Length: 463
Image (cartoon, rainbow, N blue to C red; front, side):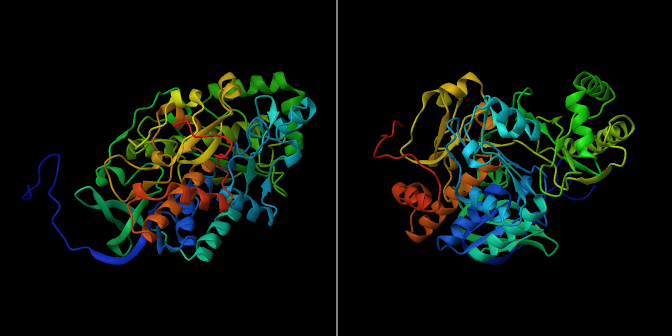
């Protein structure tokens, strides 16, 4: 047995790590929150580096093929999530790469309109009304995100996996990343974890929760896929005009191990494309064995579904598998113990925090959503307790399981990125710690970046 080798561990030899570069801000993870944080930091004057392990920016929104930006308006039809989220949409609009209900219908309870748009996509309706949710083209989004990063002056490193925080005592001073060029370091004044799963947290010394109720949405992985060549009119006519037969067929497919139902693309010139976003239980979404299981199982079930649809479902006679997501769909892993952790109690308390950095429409909790239509998010929920120079801009924000379940989607993460990036730039500019930035200055800059916030002149903070 080699020296230092045991049955369970090895001693990794010490080595010198080349410093690739130094920056004001380094962001690890180029998904919705990480990309938004990097762009916001750079736009506010910080020398910014963005490190992303895949070959595209966008994370779940692009590589994960989760091509939905949901729940942007509240039950009154008012848009509450904008900022870079709206910028994504507006840029994709120019290439006709989006689909969503027109503004005049947001908040409408007109039964005919609700039914019409529900048939188009159930993401367009909540609480028996129409809301602002967007379906989009992932391939166009990839180009949009590249443009935004380049225009802002972000130094982007793709195919580079940020693996470890560099820490002195409790202060994070940079990161280690791995690539084809080997193991290198980036030093920075502020580090932002935009990995989604909080990959930097263990090495940074941050504490966190990982518990998940197996019945929640977040306790599942996804391997999304598309089918092309579908006669969508024929397929939808069958689904709605022969609903009992369709339901019976889908029940049969489920028994065979397939994925019942399908979602139309809804995008212009994609009327032959349908999506499937299945779920697979996984309580540890950082476990490589669990990730591998879903990659294998997902493709087996995809083929069962494909074969069944082609043989039995009208409209799928000439269908083919167009795409499986190159990035596995993950929903939750680590959640920081933050300076303020949002909990289920906060959802019913209607708190308006003095350091609010985002307002999220609450649309998925039935009667509770009607009673409490919006949730305010404090800046403190992005700061890991007991750690300096580190922010999160992803679903690893401070939350309990229930808050995480409803408010960790693509637009929520972009909103975290808007706030974390500006906060990081302010800390660098004013030579202060991230906890010491001027909150009013942060909120002012968020407002100028088209982020809706409370009008504190009319509604005083309650927390």
